[in-house]
Every structure is written in C-alpha cells, then in structure tokens.
Amino acid sequence: MEMPSEDLLDIKFRLYDGSDIGPFPYSATSTVDMLKQRIVSDWPKGKTIIPKAVNEVKLISLGKILENNKTVGQCQVPFGEVAGGVVIIHVVIQPALAKTRTEKKIDDSPRKIVCSCSIL
Image (tube, rainbow, N blue to C red):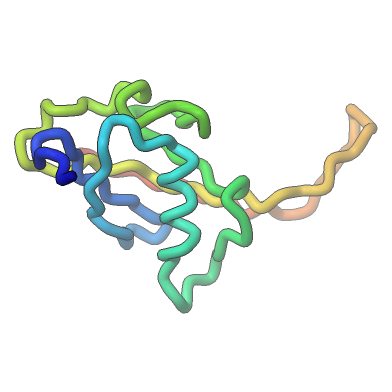
C-alpha cells in the first residue's frame, strides 16, 4: 500500500562542514531514532568526524535538540508547511566520553567544538 506523497516531508541533514545527507522523504510518524540510524548508515566516506553509534548523533531543528522517542510530527518540524521545500535538520556528533564521578574535575585539554548554522 502506497502512502500519499503529501504525507511525506523531505528532510536534509546538514553536517558540521556544511555538506548534506539527503534529502530523504519521511512521514510524520518517523521517529528521531530512525533518522539517526539513517544518518549513521549513510554517513559520507572521508569525513574527519565519524559517528560510531546512533547515541553519538544529536539532531537540532529550530534550535532544539530532538529526542529519540519523538516523531518528526512531534518535533515541531513545520510539517506540511514547507510546500515542496526541504526541512534542514542540523547534525552534531558528540563522541561518547568516559563519565567521571568527580564533580570539580579541571580539564584544560583542548576540545573540538562543532557548530553548524544556517540562515534560511
């Protein structure tokens, strides 16, 4: 059974270096976890930062980090308001860090900050 095309939303994933994965069509019932799995499986070769697992991927839309158990429709993606356009969701990779028990640990090691911004 084929879904009507108006029930699908094209989503493009913007990576840290400004390149994109997609766009791919998703329904409003697709979960954020499903989007992350697609990103990990379709990650472009040759990137300096590569997600090793789905839990290292953070998706940001309209300034909010999207929760894994939420659907595309629940994430306040302007579903159906795009009129043939493509929704851009930003991808941030946060490698899993070893958690420490000490609260006041001083860490002066340099950190890589990944930021992806666009004005539409």
